[in-house]
Image 1 (cartoon, rainbow, N blue to C red):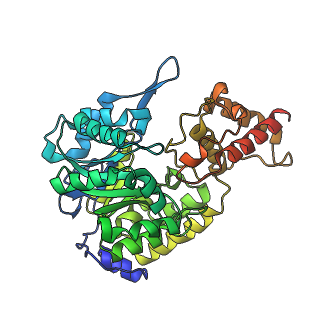
Image 2 (image 1 turned 120 degrees about the vertical axis):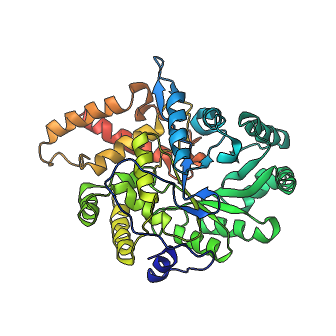
Image 3 (image 1 turned 30 degrees about the vertical axis):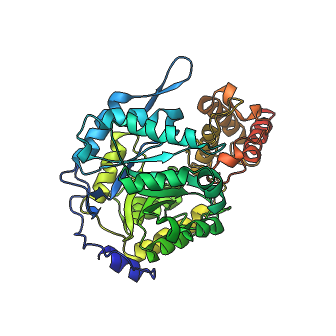
Length: 435
């Protein structure tokens, strides 16, 4: 079954570019991977490298630094297997992602890699600052063009107007595209359906060359809060023949570490496959995908994804239905929908916001979340819970330091009411400390 047949059998629209037939996967449990990542769009690997989660180490003062030699090795391995799309931003890794990514990529001929980076100014945008950020990206990568340039994290036409139209920045970028220094111009989106539709309504005026959306089998129909379901965004983009870059295929790692009962259902179906591979097969099964971004921090992440996308096997209709059942159950779990993007950081009061949410979510996934003293072995579980909390989050970065200043709230692309969630965790911890 090829991609188009899958889409049709699943009852989804399947117009736009057709998909090449995909051979059945062979040697699923054979290690390392030979050959190239399957090509969908000419010259672009179906698997793209998201550069927001490079491997790091922490120094004596608690500051994290990118492990450059490991980044170099990961980039070399990725390029050797056809992964040639690298997505970064001037703000990732506290401003160090572009440098580290450029250092790794510039060791290879420019023709071997495609650069996707962003105009990442979110407030008080000025023309001079935006142009300076754009040129700094070109300088870091020692290049005179960007393959894919994104207006970063738009949530609607009003934001586009305020940040980039009124400032003259968009006119500048349109001229850069006309001159060939921006090969493709698009935007990444987080927001409501109305916001998405308002941006797409401007396609006739600006001709978006591609759009980057958050898409996975949970967000397909269960995005929640003020986020747009991916099924709507994908259908609109396919109808307009706009290539789609898919981000957060694992929903910040949530879909790689499902609760045990749900993971067992997938393992029973394909025992040799990783839980993460199901999520990557989902997003890879759509014909309009330009590339699927994955923040592959470690080599095992890269190798697992390569096994999925070399000789790619799209989902069958009944596998698609199974994932929808899983998504319905995942959406009912009392988790905080944080993807670990760190857009909320740094906190002015030193709180490790994504670290707090990761700890809390892991207790839900592992069924160690404490609700009532009537739970079995509560006292023992209470002490273990508090010890794990202190180990996971340093005391100076814990929930009790939050004063609800709200600076993080407008920065969150998932629209999480961050202070409220932090205070909920703080109340839980305080109650457990009091016994």
